[in-house]
Length: 204
Image 1 (spheres, rainbow, N blue to C red):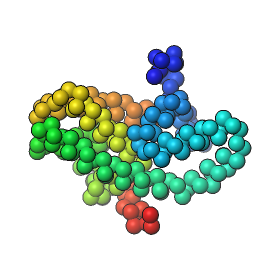
Image 2 (cartoon, helix red, strand yellow):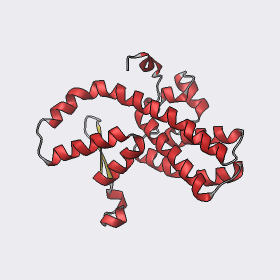
Image 3 (cartoon, rainbow, N blue to C red):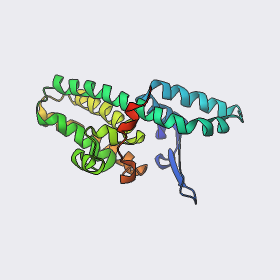
Image 4 (tube, rainbow, N blue to C red):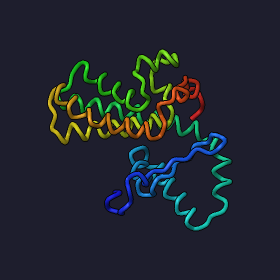
């Protein structure tokens, strides 16, 4: 995409910290929409609508976002967790179809934990005292793991991997790419890992 638009890859995503510690990230619009489509169709639509409102000069947008953000953050987390939980079944089915068995399931899951958070499943559980590591992840971690699972499936299909060794060789490059994204967006921060199980008890 960067080559197509003639934009340096480093300029496709930009990050800035304000003096009071707030963190802002900007992404080239097509890149943002492409990433959003991996996460959730509703999110892609929301970003597209928001972007068009910005272009039209809608002055009410900033106030609307500020007003709804605290409530929506919980809903975004719940949606992202549910999307990842559902998709993990599809990833595991793909592993089975590629003749994977035994440890390869845990390997694919934990390599994404390490790629997105810098921590293994065991370390995340020890830090946050959760049973399911998804309950400790930030919304960004969940979204990135969903992207990683999609890419794991594509890698297995692309290389026609059969068996644990071939699957491992196919998915390892994916983990490197996901790690690069996580590092770029400062997701290796233990403060982002905390027990969020109480959110699961909230009304939908």
